[in-house]
Amino acid sequence: MNEISADAPGRVNLIGEHTDYHQGFVLPVAIPQRTRVHVTPRFDRRVLASSGAFGDEIYEYVIGAETRGGTWLDYVQGVTHVLRTVAPNLPGFVVHIESAVPLGSGLASSAALEISLLRALRALYELSLDDLDLARLGQRVETDFVGAPVGIMDHMACSLAREREALFLDTRSLAYAHVPLPERAELVVINSGISHRNAGGSYATRRRESFAAATLLGMQWLRDVEDRQWDDLERLPPLLARRARHVMTEHRRVRDTVDALQAGDVERVGSLLNASHASMRDDFEISTGDIDRLVALGSSDPDAYGARLTGGGFGGSIVILARARLGIDVAHRVLRAYHAGGSQRATILLPNHLHDASTA
Image 1 (tube, rainbow, N blue to C red):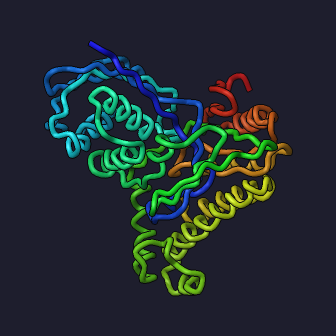
Image 2 (image 1 turned 90 degrees about the vertical axis):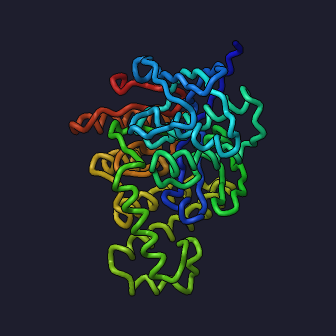
């Protein structure tokens, strides 16, 4: 039987956190770490799935009888669950998964799996789906089956983003453009070693709070709050005012970052990253003490322009904008200081490739 292989990258979100489910702007970048799947067809409705990250044990289920179990298999089951809406007679298959995108790192490991599997099944069974279709289906895997109330950013990024080019995405219209990173700068990504889960309660709570704030402001989406309505934040309960302020200011920061990138103003981009982290820490309250230490070390490095938490929060990774060709030096200095303080083990994901923290 013919084997089809397909892959998809993880992503780091340069800026634009918790704006996508308010139909705002985001600015992710693809990373070199990818998830790859190897798929062979079957002539019944059974799926046999294994993952190198979980010991290669084979799990089996029947398409049409998907049942959420709270494990990695849910992401495979979710793919067939949503694909049945466009391909009701979808046959079974055997799939083996290999991934270099660290789980729980805030770098879209689940979306990378979903998009890579959707790409493989599209090719294997000649499904008439374009890359936007795959992104929409991937989001539905998480919202409709896994139970994670995520926006569409991760899936658009894993389907359409490129390395060294930020994907400027309007999550309302799904219009997008690729914005090259200036030659003067490079990205550093450090995985804190603190795992996070979008399906967990804290992420969902922040989402509910932000929508409660929108409702009190008379809006469905915080994207639509106009400048003249900013004074209305004062009449909100303090907690909801902080949640709304983060989303509203972050939406503006994405557009300002695109302008700065196009102008080659890396210092301005760095200051926007710093402001974004302060907003996530103080207004949206999704950072942690260890993450704040990593960000402070990154943003204060003499060869860095700025730094912030990236991803849904409560753990995961940070992104640093560093001087070109000096990113690895920045990363090692940050890790030396971070680990000297007794914090949890962290690893360098960018630049270039995975670097173990023990080399720092």
